[in-house]
Picture (tube, rainbow, N blue to C red):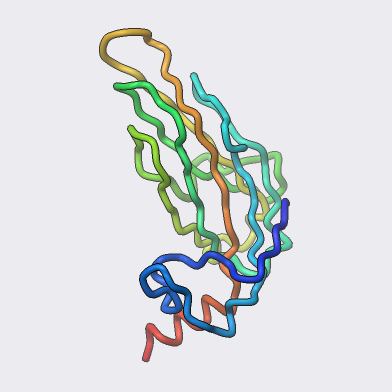
Length: 165
């Protein structure tokens, strides 16, 4: 697991400490957020495939913010990215545990991945499928990447406390 420490983490847009483009002071603001790379940025996909297995067992939280970043495409094609889980990193569940919405264009798409209902899952990986239709080449092409950022327990606690009050 690749870990990055930041002093002022980027918080999800729905977090109460985020107001417009300004971050308000909060005790959670100094929490380090771990980031895992499921698919390296700039990966070019022309057929279905799988990303690397990432061990999440050391995470303090079981809730993650996934980001699908698509940087290049060709017209008339689609990309489907789903997340699969495993207890041991070699035997994968037959069904995905989460999926990004189907994408056709460049941009970033968020996904909240909550593994609290899957306590035995220690590993995750991304799986993608591509499709192309219409005129021109029949081979699809997407340049993309997928990351997961751990949502620290103190932020989750703060959000759930405010949601219940």
